[in-house]
Amino acid sequence: MKQKSPNTLYGYWNELRAGRIAPRRLEVEPSRIAGILSETFMLERVNAGDYQYRLAGTRLCELFGAELRCSNFLSGWQEADQALLAHKLALICEQGAVLTLEIETSGAPRHALEFEAILLPLVHTANSINRIIGAMSLTSPTPIGASEHPLRRRLRRLEVIWPDGRPRAVLERGSTAPFQAAQAPLPSAQKGERPQLRVLDGGRTFWKKGAP
Image (cartoon, rainbow, N blue to C red; front, side, top):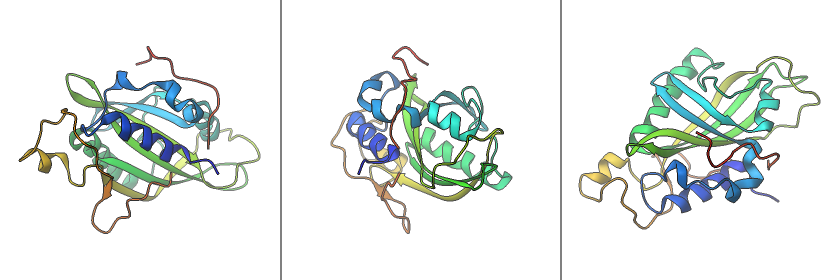
């Protein structure tokens, strides 16, 4: 049985960061994750309420019934979910958190779709985290036909995971600089949250080395 895309992406990301708060955007080699590119995406943090898709895999665009590139990740969610996600996405960019999501959509042919997703920080410019790489896998049965309209999204579950066991701000008080390489420990979840990353496999390559 193949690993789901979020699991595969987390393993690659954690290896690549080598104990730093996050790997750099240009360190990511698409060939290393070729099997999950159709379910992989990248976001740019424009401001606190706008996380635009810079790249989005072909399978995700087909399942969501829309071209995701240049759209806002926070669009299409219930209002309460938007506010919660905006707060948690800020933790990725400001503290190096990892998010795992369980998502339910409406508007699909015949039945709702369910997804599992992971979102991970990337350093892009000026030693700041303003890119997020993610992967999303369908966990419900594959729909019979593609949706003709963009799907509405509802957040079923969200977990914040600190790959180094605690928020980066806590570690920095008596530890190394945020971008210094170190030994990478296993991920830990916040108290009361499970640390497992349960999060189909690939399709056409959508990502080129020079992409933003």
